[in-house]
Image (cartoon, rainbow, N blue to C red):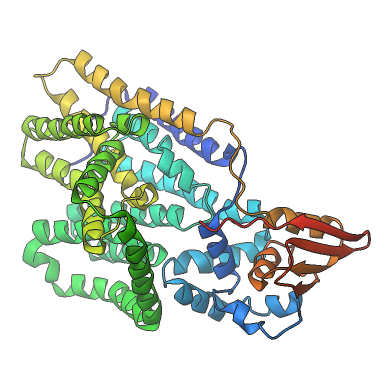
Length: 485
């Protein structure tokens, strides 16, 4: 593939790029201004503690369960079992959160800290990828701004979910993927495969990027890909993922049942191929930084923005100086926009729209920003287009991205979906030693939010309409708030 593009404003650009990296890290560290957890995050917390959907059944005949009994379930083996019982997805994240929380504690802030650190590592890895493809110049500056201010990336960097870890692994895989295309070193192929497998074991949907990696290597390397050293280099990653899926096969069956249940529920609302198409076009435009459909979700706006994105891609192909530049642009476009095609196809197959949801595009985001920056480079390098027009194009992309970021993450009251973190804080601060809950799953979640080693006995009363806390100050009641959607 092509060498890094020519340096523009090298000295100043390098300083600006370091500032952009630091600014992106600051966004991660200082947001969100307020944090509330939702259902999927509670699943991550429970899985990290070795607790699954089936765990409450163990206590069905018990009148009282101690925190020590629940804590004994917090083992590596049970984390794996809980992940499989969920649907086998996100095992690397769950086991990572298991060990991280054992060191940093069980507060919401501690759980979220792992995600923040992974997001910061993603920014650093993305900077390395940009320098590898673009060089340390103003085009890297553009890529960093677009990536750091992407509302999906920022949002996922504050969720107790696997997306930030997946973004990190897929970016690292991308670094070594491009190196392998350039130098054919088996080590780089091995690291591409290893980080790709890590991405899949973090979140299955990262596969849409890995399919592009595979297709590109087959296309560009052809028969040379299958020499003995390359085959040996890829055997370990393939063996690892095959072994995991062998052990986790029941979880894949669970995922299939979950998909069938979603399909049955969705049938009442109908299914439209036109709706799939419009959502696909919408996310393609937004991910490629023409974000106007995020402000106004109207078919005309979506179509105009998608046509604008398509026109820019065609212009970029025509302005490419040689085959290598065209191939680079095509590859980056496939990595950036291939997710829409893949997720749209999943919707058609499953007959519901679940796959076309913004968080599932997380793994293409680094390549979306990189593609746009490389496209701008091709336009800038052409003598056929005036620089003022290119500046206007950058403004059309960057200003709405920044505005959308500011609007989305300004201080606001987030909806409270779970009261359990507040209950856990009250238990720890007021020395509560007995808690009555309406369901055992409430006890499991609250216990997962208490300081390590805290001792308390849980009682279950299905007729209770509130949590009943008993401690040195007597009895207190707190309403049960659990919005599972």
